[in-house]
Image (cartoon, rainbow, N blue to C red; front, side):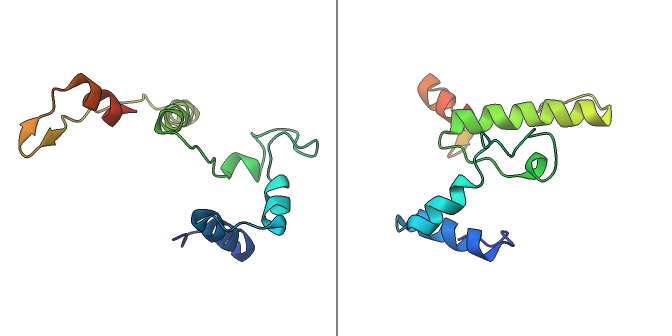
Length: 105
């Protein structure tokens, strides 16, 4: 359930989308938020620079998060530090390469 979204109309749209019950008004609202709209000159400007990005695959989301981390560290003049976790299952390290790849996507 979407609780952080302050825009009531958009929150309701997200709830219907989650349930697969979108309508024409939802579609029209989403069209106003497409980055390719002629009225949007740059994604670096407000309010687009703080807009959430919907990603349907974990690989895409991971890449977006990585790019955002690199950008934010550069903006703040900080060195980026990456900490990799050792995933375990029932106390044993996960060594299956396919499962490891899935966890890192």
